[in-house]
Length: 301
Image (cartoon, rainbow, N blue to C red; front, top):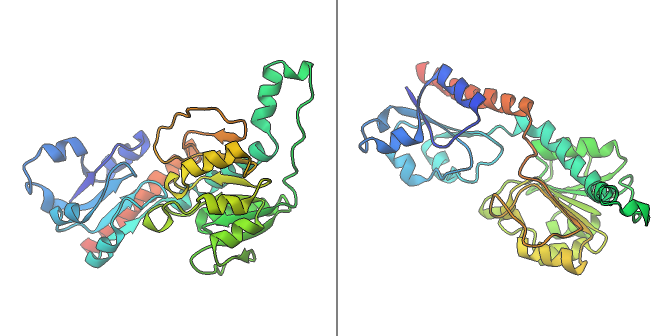
């Protein structure tokens, strides 16, 4: 049985795939005559660099599992996959700890002005003027949009900072004592810091717009470790320039890689690196492989 690898993966993940399965890479698959190997493919291994839609599923009549390397699954037509009984898995639990750590680091870096402090010293400005005062993280209201595996870990870590935790999901979660808000607007109005850890896709496209940013207010901060599509980026940059919000930290962008056209002192940027640790990548590879193995065992009975 063949696994179709639709996009490049980290070397550790590709090596693990090849040890367990006969892997067909994207170049060799596309160079084959149509239908020559399609019926032998039972699984897909991929990341967010590609689309897995109805047309692709039509080509793979024996497809049983789509194993996504990463938390994102919005590039998969999950409605069609569910209709066909195709399992769609991701590795969000494997990266939740490192992404949550990163989110806390972004909050500290943003609210306490750590990057600005580095620049203040490195530029020699400390010799002539004091650095501006920052705010305390302790006791602030933290609003989390998306209380899944990653959001729960962020909540757990934020509690150690004595923060007040609120969240918004499509429905209240059962594994938390955090305060539930029925809309992102209500959550943003209450929050001092709004952290996005929700899935991408049509349901959350442009979820954070000018209205949400206005509700967050001139002393509010935004942190996005979810998907770039969740935030209307133009509206965010306008809010940062006008002082409609105090600051933002972005690890994801509408288009990646991202190069800013103007440097904003209240904007902290990182290159989609929240899960980029050796440990996370190994756990993610293991989880992706296990999803494929589980389906293999089901097929074999």
